[in-house]
Length: 80
Image 1: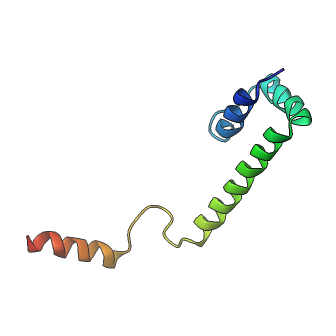
Image 2 (image 1 turned 30 degrees about the vertical axis):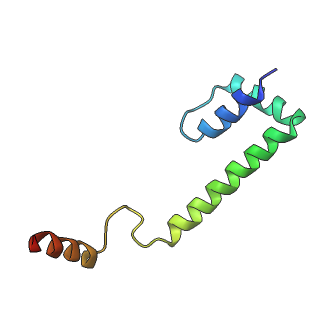
């Protein structure tokens, strides 16, 4: 049986690191009996939904700054 520490780690990393079919089956069995890990999984899923919603609301979610902000920074740097 998988330990809670391992399951929570793997659930957290599952969106970034692919899990084997065997590992996914182990996690599924563990989640059937462990309410704490089920809660952890639910919290991760909720956090992911909230982050996706927040990113969708950001018009410039690509990491770039608005032109006016870049201009102000440039002006301040050139003042020195």
